[in-house]
Amino acid sequence: MTLLGLDVGSSSVIAGVLRGTAVVKQSVRAFYASRHDGPKVDVDGDEILRAIREAVASLGDDAKRVDAVALAVMAPAWVAMDAKGKALTPLVTHQDRRSVEVALDLERRVGKERHLAIAGCRPFPGGISSTTWAWYLRNEPARLKRADLVGHLNTFLHRKLTGARVTDPSNASFMGVYRTTDLGGWSDELCEAVGANRALLPDVLEADKIAGQVLPSAAEAFGLTAGTPVMTGLVDGSAGVLLAGASVGQLFNVCGSTDVLALCTNRPTPHEKLLTRALGIGRKWLAVGTLAAVGSAIYWAKANLFADMPLDVFRKELFRLSKIGAKAAGGVRFEPYMAGERTSVEQRTGAFTGLTLASTREQMLSAIIEALTTASADRLPLLAATGTKMKSQVVVSGGAADRLDKLLHRDWPGKWTYKAVTEATLAGLGTMVPRK
Image 1 (cartoon, rainbow, N blue to C red):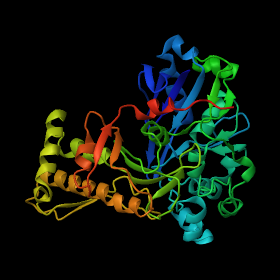
Image 2 (image 1 turned 90 degrees about the vertical axis):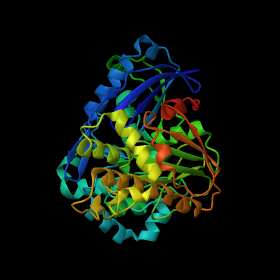
Image 3 (image 1 turned 180 degrees about the vertical axis):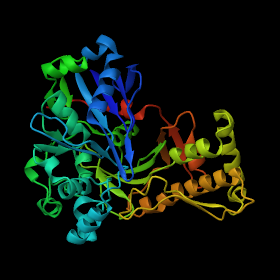
């Protein structure tokens, strides 16, 4: 079987022709930009569609000769659509923090423990998109009057490609109105707390189910073949876990701009400092610890403190300072929250302390390294507390040129082995076999 895989990430799209997990042809990377306006972070839906067209077009006619299409998407990326599938709002991403006050109110209404027990997570601003939905209902109600469908990026893409109204359990988990812990469907209790109309929600199908076929209009617009089956799709991190084997106890670590450490389990155990979500296929879940700004914090330092230093020299400096350890920071400390904190309702920010007139840029960079390595290691006791025994081999992806994982794993307690994989999301889609 030959698949067309679409990996729609937070800043770009990669398309690939897959035979099993082998990527036999890969597209150019087609970029798009997020908008940053204070606490608001979103993406124009038309920009994502443009990037998909560009990526698919670079594959030529090979994109038309596939047996099915598989989707992996960033999540959450919340959007409201009209009856024709046109986006009424931008796609609001996990970096968005406009809904802090709304999130606090939702948690007061439902109760922290109750929300955790149903949804698997607290209502984190932007990161759990019920907070975004509630924000629009309160602040821009006129924009939602014509809403016919509300969902995430895979829902939006299906409306464009197939006309279907679907999502999968992994994306549904981040909607904040889904019964994540028992995969029990949409929750009337949580919908009521948000003020959400349940009739606007998509059907939830497992990620490998065929949700629809490419429409003739979509075939012409995207360079595909009409009638090609399209699977429901899933969150991009789930595709990487599938590539790693999706066995209970498997750790999968994406080290890039954001650092995501996921533990596969068959026993969801919500924790207020972890994200608990469905894998997307079968009765498995992921317990996830996320550092919102890792590579992005390091390259902020490159741009603002080491702009004169060649990139290859800067990378060597990173690892030199890491080997020296905390003493290289000279008493300078760093709070690693430059993109907020994914598992906090009230948001934190990045900060340096301990600065003096004698402090150097090397000490500031060392402080960033020390904070990030500590934060990386601190997730392991949280994951261990879920009760799922972790396997010693960690599958690692992301940041291939930098190998930030080698830096970030420095302080992990215990003995671990690491298996690096490239393009884990795209290759992971190849593990899925379309089901009717």
